[in-house]
Length: 438
Image 1 (cartoon, rainbow, N blue to C red):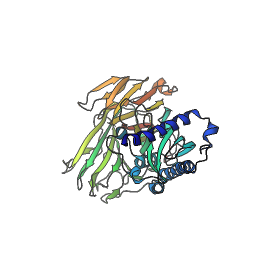
Image 2 (cartoon, one colour):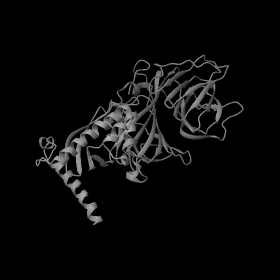
Image 3 (cartoon, helix red, strand yellow):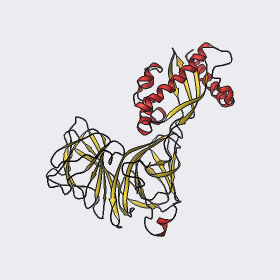
Image 4 (cartoon, rainbow, N blue to C red):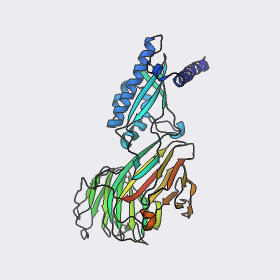
């Protein structure tokens, strides 16, 4: 009895899936079955309301509208092991809100039965054809083409959407720096995790730095002998030039997640976790060799209460001269999903946070860095695991730099679980400061 109770709804969903694939567009747009069954028509309307509520959650970040159309369990986090730990419904919508709040899901056609429904979905407003200043040749789809629903009591009680081939691109932060001399620069990135109450004094080396707060709360304070009277601070994506705040030496500045700080060279500063939860910051250093990252300074140095993770890369590369945009983002790719770009006028740094990444490039070989031992190898293709990274460089000087870029770079999820990769780009500034270029 129990077995038949499970098989019957599954058979209905499969039948609906077959119908969705075989019926013409005109047939699908009628939505309700020819029999005019009231329950089926009501379920079709419920599916429409589901997408309206989902779009509201994407636009505002608040999933409250979904509570009227879906069962409470659907808004809970995805259980461990489900679809390779692909995010649950509320989590996916929150990610889409952060990545592309203008995105809309449009049900182009709906087929419904008494306890199930399916919809063919179009995605609108997924974003521009660039990411972190890179011209994209292939980008993952943020939502599946067909959704299946289970319906009971006037609510959606089950939602099944494909995972393979899907992915979300999210820009995290942006800053503008000046490259004055055509000399090699060392690029390096660290992730610092501060325990509650942890603090340290540090000093940027012989070049600029960027601090991005991922999570938690930090206070930032420059030394009284600062060489520069102010720093640029920004709350949120790409607001460094729109919302500059003066930082008075000796006066702490509270940072919130998403804030970006541009650190002038040889600046001494203190960061402190003033909250009750761990704080996570990414620190980028760009400087002439050999030093690149901010170095610990003062009596506290880097205490054991601050965990340091080296994300790479520590190699000297040529950067575009003049103003450059330093952009930080995260790509989350489902199994088989791809991200590809053609060209690019500056280096790209990759750091695999989880999953399995297949990297291929038709340009110069990428410097692949293994997290286990820090070994570096120049390769045109490689499989990277969590902790590994790669640095893709381009010729920023000479005839090659003046030619139209044609190198193709491809990232693909080569595993069965979601791939998460941190991506940092340094590209020539292509628009007035504070204007999005991606």
